[in-house]
Amino acid sequence: GIKWIKDSIKVNTPYVIFGKANPFQGSYSMPHPEMELLSDYEGSLRTAMQPVYRSTEKLTARGITNRVMQRCIQQIINNMGGEFQETLSDDILKRYRFVSKGDAMFNIHFPKSHESLLAAQQRLKFEELFFIQLQLIRKKIIRNTRFKGNKFEAVGELFNTFYKDYLPFSLTEAQKRVVKEIRKDLGSGAQMNRLLQGDVGSGKTMVALMLMLIALDNGYQAAIMAPTEILAEQHFRNIGRWADTLGMKAVILLGGTRPGEKREIVRQIEAGEIHIVVGTHALIQEEVGFRKLGLVVVDEQHRFGVVQRAALRAKGSNPDVLVMTATPIPRTLAMTVYGDLDISVIDEMPPGKKPV
Image 1: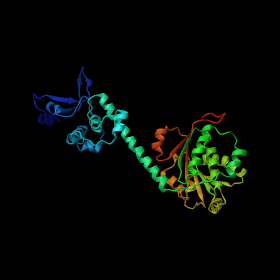
Image 2: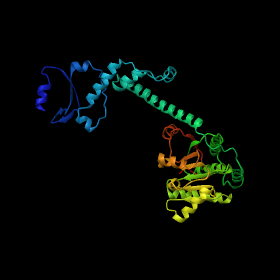
Image 3: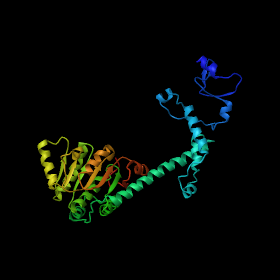
Image 4: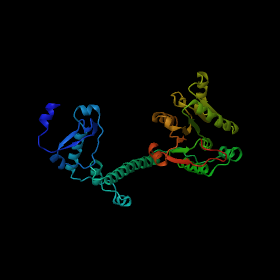
């Protein structure tokens, strides 16, 4: 690098040098520093705090270094003259005391102080989440107006008999609230897409069973898909027992189900002889068809792909969808993670039970 130093560095000319100072033989050295003429530095937008732009090995090899990125951003800001179109209303800016879009864009790259950087970050983070939320609200409005669901108008004999005679425990206020919220969706005529969140043991499966009974009361079939055979078998032990008690037929369909048995189960599902189907990914296989699928329950939905969930929905004519998860997710994050799903939370455990 001697030739580069000889050709590039001017004698008796002040420079500003950036780098990490390392102790070396009783003194300090600065390996591979960035150097800039003092006159260029003073004429730039740089401040005491310097931005660091992530790059890749290929970009760096082609000369697109952090310094080059700084110069590009600086040129863009200079060309804009600090004029960035405001995207938030005056009411929002005043209510939350946000800086303007121009100030935020300048200080996120070349902050005048630590306080200026924090103000810029707060403004831009809010703006990003705000427009994500607007997109989700728009999707929800479109879904509710364009995609009609199955209107479950009756709360009939199956639901009432189970609730009065067989419910093994009194519902908590949280469970009653959730059933009421989802019951309203089922009777609206718009396709339901709802997330049911609650700790293990909070009674999500019992709530799901009661809602499936509403679907059955209205002449529809219901299906519940679990990510593992163990979890599917656990659901079937509980749901199948109550279905038998009420004179309904429930079956379990797994990937390991024997071919002959599977063919008979598929035939009965298509004929409408089976009311509730519990299973794993086997439910979305091409040969599985429903006569009148009205409600789909997906357990631990984060363990399924988008295509898998869509495939189960496609088994019916716009069936209502209930997603269950025990994964603790903050409500605001869940609104982003689960898209345009409405959210119900069971935040109270039944008597004698503790969160697992």
